[in-house]
Image (tube, rainbow, N blue to C red; front, side, top):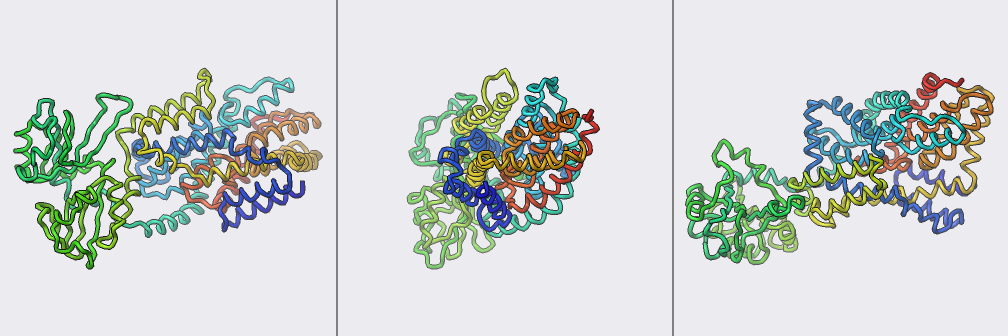
Length: 624
């Protein structure tokens, strides 16, 4: 018992110190429990197969898909418009919306749904995401107190009452106390998050911003005026271009045009598995009906090309609309980037065609920035000068290959990071349908599917239906530090229970307060539960303390209902630790929080919430 308590205390100290990664601390604690033979290897590793941990992995993937497809940005924009861009209104919207969802969906599922939306809203509005993400996690737990099914501890105390011959609780029996929890938590978190999270995140964001290099895709499109010279033409079913090789047409020589890409939309064949493929234009490329050709050049040349080959203009091209057409220049598989020619480069004084960008790297040169001038036409015969900045276009992987030949040029920015940031917005309806399916499977009891199964199904569907660019992109959305942290700390509750430490602590604290009246006894039960749930799962804590609360109430002859509600609320309202609940761990990497951030914000909230509930619960559920 002593060794287990020492390991727990040391772990808490290292978490608070913050100099060692939290997942490493958790693994060291796990190894220590094994070395002291407190746990068997099977018991120690049980956390890695726990359904909550597996659910978290799946939820990271689902949340990543919601972000990758742009669905988060769409929903976030709607919520942002409701708030009018006001940070305070946005805060209340996030808190109340999350709590409402959390009343019917598990707090873990609620955070997984809301996290990408809140991150997108914060990015759009210029608010630090960390100011909203920790409140988001806490609001999901608060919302769970509104209904019987909102959180597992509610069902634990319901079972304790029924087993002891009391009437079962109704679906909304928790609503009065739950509303107090949501109101108190929302009002307290408003100043706490502003004081302790806002400035901390800003420093981190500024530091990370300094490390980023290169321009955004939108900046490059605007700077080089690509949209001003961009035309989109669709191949008709009776076009003479059908099944012809591009080399046979010789568009560049005949019309002085450059084909940037060919986009093929297969949605007419597979409505659900809607796919848009982008292809570079090669001499052997053959066009199909409904292909969209992106060409740059003069309006007269495009008009002649379109008339000769029966091509349909997809949008009007004039000065007034060109600035609005940036949205048409989307990047999925093909992107753009800049390279700077080094003074010692072997390709200086060669023409663009002689430099072999197309033949060696399969990329096009769309423009040249030379001093303050931009060259965008007839580039094939343009000689390369030292210091020229070339705007190149190709698949993201081919652009990334340019980085290997840094003797002749330097690639600006990080193409693969840019590719990862590109949203597959045409998949947003698919992601929305999968997300709603997952919620339905988790909410409705008549669907015989466990929540963890529902999450796994949703994550798998997100990958199969192409909501990610590839499987590797799905894996990258998982925060393995958070997963290892939770999985390694879960056996700690087993060790405390197995050695009798939990029973000893709870019994000693509760029994010592029994002589001071029901209010003091309920306060002792509440804060004992609150303390223990920082290190043990809230469900396990509720299971352990519910019988003690029943017995304590029986000994002094009062109703056990307020005592049991104290257990349920205290077990669920744990905010002072990142590993006490899955929602706290889910937002940790996105908010860039440290262990001390949870102490500074969560501990005052947890203590004040406890004081308020000890005073309020006897008013809602009298002792007699």
